[in-house]
Amino acid sequence: EAGVAQSPRYKIIEKRQSVAFWCNPISGHATLYWYQQILGQGPKLLIQFQNNGVVDDSQLPKDRFSAERLKGVDSTLKIQPAKLEDSAVYLCASSLVAGGPSDTQYFGPGTRLTVL
Amino acid sequence: GEDVEQSLFLSVREGDSSVINCTYTDSSSTYLYWYKQEPGAGLQLLTYIFSNMDMKQDQRLTVLLNKKDKHLSLRIADTQTGDSAIYFCAERRTSGTYKYIFGTGTRLKVLA
Image 1 (spheres, each protein chain N blue to C red):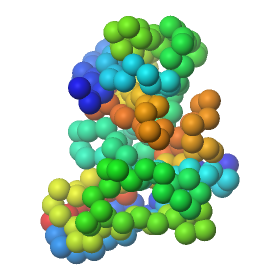
Image 2 (image 1 turned 45 degrees about the vertical axis):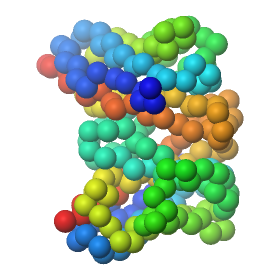
Image 3 (image 1 turned 180 degrees about the vertical axis):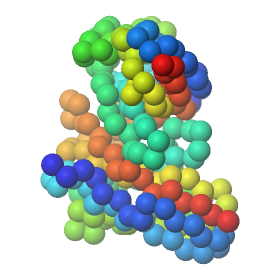
């Protein structure tokens, strides 16, 4: 079974520029998550989708971050404009269904963003 | 507090046992997880425990849960150099949506 795919793997931009990340979850997984992992910290949930609807975006800085999951499959996360503190690894994860007995999240390799 | 806490570093000799500790925050959390992250990779689920269990064993891994103290530990028996990685505990809170809160991670270094 193919895993969660993310691209690009690395991105370097200057502050105030825009950037977008792409995630393709495991086939058939209804739930998709975007996490931000700052160096030396654990992942922090930014947004959770169930199919193409948003379940939780309480920690998403909505003034600059946006995410969509059209058709309930692939997802994009955008930052516009980027700030220095956005430098982090952005992880995408998917699970079969949220809230199930194990609800195992499978993570992609992440996109490492550096904002100069 | 809001944070899931872990010690930052652990160093053990190959063949010894490793014990990684975690203190979580929400006594109503139903599932608690251990993830492993190797350099440049995403997180890999190692094991999880349901909150009504005290212990779970899975090959070299043993998870102990003290619900009263909100303390979780992961024991790795016969630690190998391939176990060197960062280990994260996570709790799945049940208030509101199913939100996962991750700890800060423990970097395990296994010395040959």
